[in-house]
Length: 217
Image 1: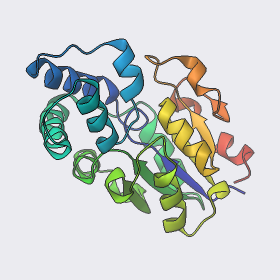
Image 2: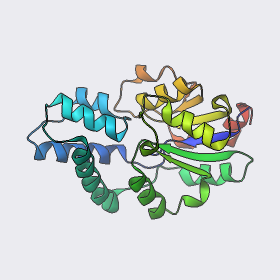
Image 3: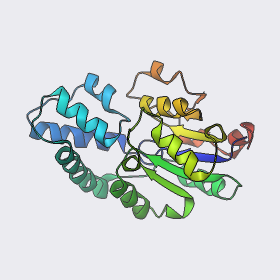
Image 4: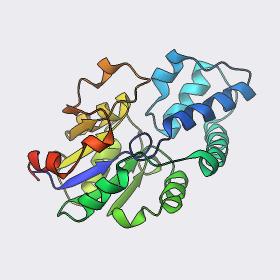
């Protein structure tokens, strides 16, 4: 029986993936590097540490991981402040779920500083019983750490939770934890990578209480 809905943030709640990509392009251009589709496929959905390690190792950078993360967040928040918007259908779904008996959590690879910025900007704190950042676990997605930690913090078993994800790494993370996973695929990624999801939807507006009830809410 499903007792909690867990939202990924980037790409699920906020239309941020193009802005992350814009951030990455700006960072890499400053270092004289080219952003390409092969690299994009690897980085989408990774935690901050994992994505910084990927950048450092792929391009043999001398910078340390913490500096890369700080640079990225600085560029990102400036872009978020000017350009970020919510995904269509989010507030309607959050309104419905928050009125149900389900617990509602957010589990994002983003640093807590970024999550708090987003929740404050759009007044979303009121909807969540729990907020979990990639900073709180040792290994980021596609490791199951963040979802195992979220379930434990909610006082639930992993199979009592449904996750809404948009990245291949996120789906792998959720399924590795033993959770039910609804995927809303990032259209820039290879659709074959989402086959492990239990349900694949075209957009967030397709997810509602009727669907969640069918899962045994």
